[in-house]
Image 1: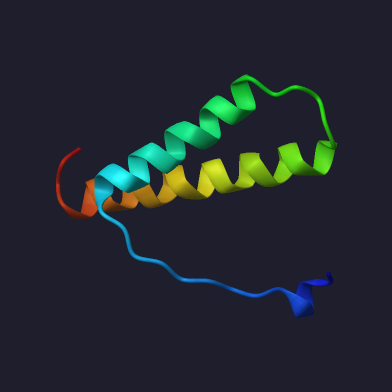
Image 2 (image 1 turned 180 degrees about the vertical axis):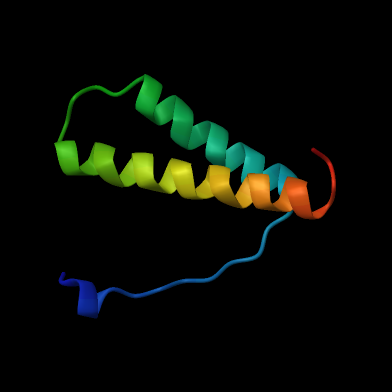
Length: 64
């Protein structure tokens, strides 16, 4: 699938779900079994995006 064919999805979740998804992605990377490298790249990007979203929420709500 080329970039122009990508489908963008928006979702809403509470902060606990955001934390859980970030944790699950982080655990996936820590326990990486060595399959296709591009999968690891996508998981890392998703984990980093979840972290950025989490930090944004925490800063916006003055929790940090």
